[in-house]
Image (cartoon, rainbow over all chains, first blue to last red):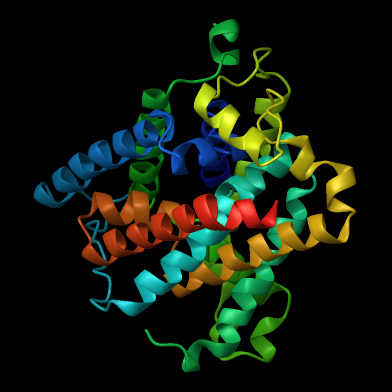
Length: 137
Length: 185
């Protein structure tokens, strides 16, 4: 099955998020109160190793499994969408303790009530699509 | 070995594994970003018929939906075969702070007071979780990505817009934590 590798990668992601407690509402509160290094450690380790990997991929023009050179899309250099959108995201992140990935991992973990948060996030996404032209980007 | 895996995993194994997943997806010719699944799910629900933003070929995102399914399975495995018997080691200062909000630390991943049946069946509880979700979904799409797309993929690629988005994540998070939560609870 062709999609098996993506399911496997997802399983690994879910396992890590749950086992390192990154899906925990408590841990997110701890992070926003600067009372533990735990979440910062996760993010910093991932970003530093990720940056080294991206640097090496670009430098050696590494190819993906289909034989194409791996390229990176530069993001649009605007200000408002990142600042405003990011801030709105942060408000919800601290309230529910969940970003989009961990919401689903939490459901797997047995926190069924997270389905309400997921439902809300779908409404939010839909709402964005509806008013996209009226927003500064 | 199983006992070692059952323990809570330290931050450095987690950070390393996240970087590994990002690179793995790059090798597969994809890019790590979870919140685009929310857009795809809207399209699957038929939103493309009414709104242009959702009118795209969802099959190009099938891999990401499989990744999402895997993430749910990962959660199931973590709560069954690899379930930790230890309570979460939350910092004392956070436990105290949450107490002043009226939220008692119960040693689980999420407080039953917020995600338990009693709370979510109250109008206030239901609205809090729904509104929180709306903010996350709207904000992620407006910012063009969430923690995986911006904080991990974007920062690893030294993208200034991603740095701005992450700063935004923190501004919103700090405002909610320090100013709004005491009002809400």
